[in-house]
Image (cartoon, rainbow, N blue to C red):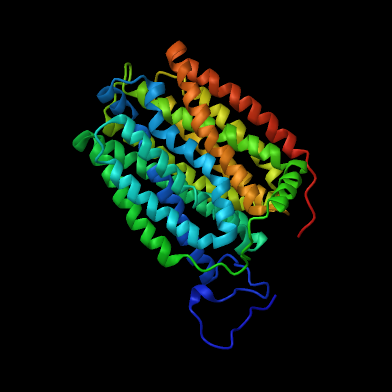
Length: 416
C-alpha cells in the first residue's frame, strides 16, 4: 500500500500514514501517539496506585485495619469505575483527546490538594473525586487507539499504553515508598502530584488530534442497541469478567504484600519494600512484547498461558524465603500485564458497535475488580494472614483460567 503524500507540508504528527489515514507502527504520527499514551498511562497508574505502599503508614497514623487502609486505593478505583461510562458518553459528544487532556490535568490538581488534608475522611473524599475526574483518560484511551491505529499495529500500540501503566505503577510505588521513609506519606503524595502535573503538560503537547472521531449526541436508544450488541457478543462479556478478576487479583496481591514484608520474618523497611515493587518493571516488557506476540499468534492462544503464569507466581509467594518470593511476584506481575494487554486489545477488535462503550465496560469491570476484590480479599488477611489472601486469589485465578479457556474456543470475527 503506497503512502499518501500531502499537497502541502504538515506537522509530522498530523500526516496520515497510509491511504486509510490510520496510524502504522514506525511512522512519526504513531510514535507521537505512542509517546502521549505512554505518558498518560504512566501518570494514571502512578497517581492511582502510588498510595498502595503507604497503606501501612495510614493504618498506623489513623488506627486502621489493613482492609480499612485499602480505602486509599479502593475509593479512587471504585469512583473511577462508576465514572467510566459517563465519561465515554462525554467523549462521544466532545471528543476523545479533549476529555483525556482535561481528565489528567484535573486529577493532578486533586492529587496535589490531598497532600495537605487534615484527616483520613477528607483524604478519602479527595481520592473519590480524583477517581471521578481521572476516568476521562482510561475511559476513552482504548477507543482512541482502536479508532486511530491500524488493526495490525493495534496490539503493539495497546501494549505500549499498558507498558506506560506498568512503568507508572512501578515508579509511583517505588517513589512513594522511598520518600515516605524520609518525608512521610504527605511528602510522597506531593511528589506524585507534581509528577502528574508534568505528565499532563507533556500529554497535551504530544497527542495528535483525532482523525476518525465523529461527534455524536447522546442517543439512549442507540446506547441500548449497543448494549444489546455487546451483551450478545460471544466474547465481550467474558472479557469483562476477565478484566474484573485480573485486576482484582493483581491489586489484592500488592495491597497486602507490604503488610507481610514489613512484618517478621522479613522485617523490611519502606525503602527495601520499594525495591520489591520495582519488580513491576517486568510488566513493561511483558505488555509490549506479548501485545505484539498476540498480533501474530492470536489472542486466544496467549491469554490462558498468561493466567497460568499468574497462578504459578502466586504459589511461590507462599515461601518464607525472599529468593523464592521475589521471583513469584515477578512472574505474577508478568502474567498480569501480558494478559491485560491481550484482553484489552481484544475488546477493541470484537466491539463492532459501541467501541467506546465496550472499552468503558471493560475498564469499569477492571477497576471494580480493583476496588471490590481488592478490599474483600483484605478480610482474608484478618482470618488467615497471607495464606488466606493467597487462597482468595487462587480462587479468582481459577475462575479466570476457565474464562480464558472458554474464550479460546471463540471463532475469530471476519476482518472489518
